[in-house]
Image 1 (tube, rainbow, N blue to C red):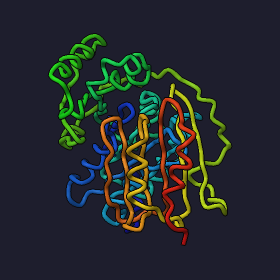
Image 2 (image 1 turned 90 degrees about the vertical axis):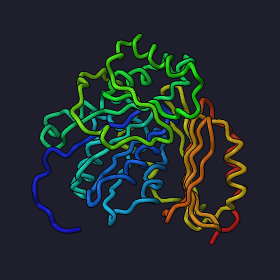
Image 3 (image 1 turned 30 degrees about the vertical axis):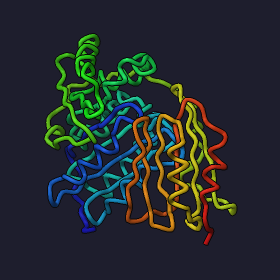
Amino acid sequence: MPSDNRQLSAVPTNIITGFLGVGKTSTIRHLLRHRPAGERWAVLVNEFGEIGIDGSLFTGEHREEQGVFIREVPGGCMCCAAGLPMQVALNQLLTLARPDRLLIEPTGLGHPKEVLEVLSSNFYRDVVDLQRILTLVDARKLSDTRYTEHDTFNQQLDIADVIVANKRDLYEAADPARLSAYAEQRGLASKQVVFTQNGEIDAALLEGGTMATTVAAHHHHGHDEQRPLVSEVPIPECGYLKAQNAGEGYESVGWRFSPSFVFDREKLFAVFTGIVAERMKAVFITHNGVFGYNLTQDALSEIELDDCLESRIEIIADKINGDWDAQIMACVSARQ
């Protein structure tokens, strides 16, 4: 990386938010694949779970030498502790990448207004140029009170400059009108609404200033600020570690496995198809190569990755299934 001591100024920055399983990661992957030639893009991604998967999914497809730089903030809402976890990761990312564009993906259970407040602070006011906030939504969920009565879900819509109605291919005829009615009910009828599928949006949607305000209702998750991140602690001699988290009405459980563990790809796929959860993401080292997995309530997808440092999995659900440990361990085919 060439030396560049110029002061960072007005980096075009977008928040891409939305509830669990709506396709934020797929949208960012699409944008990265279609970024302008020669541009350096940075992605700061936050995950509700303790393990951290998205960084491995992104870096398995994109490398820093290709102009894509990734940093994760796992373990809940990255704006907690007065924004310190977010600020540390963001400062490191900006210093390393010196990007032409910065994308920030808060967890689907996070608080985008708090993230907006950090980015609008005096410290970042001249560093980032906060542009359009994109909120992804699955219009089918508007008939489910678990979403419409969830404060975070509504906050994500309220803060949007553009509402991206993803998974259009799965909608029924009445779903688009239901979204329009809900937006009008919340006083959001003037917002731009774009329908798409598989997160395939035009990068031009990122351009333009945000109209969102920076007043946030502060919250407290009760995190232990001194606790080391499970995503970074050494894996013990047994070859794996497990972590759990809970909040906003959901629970998460995740595992990290030593790279010496090699998994049976077919057995993994069979286990994953039987998991009932709001979300599951994973990267696994198998005898057939490295693969990334993404499970929503609609489907399980598998993509081949170039590489990963270790196998990881994170599941978010209403309630954790105690059988998942044994099911995943039964997929280990060798330990090298």
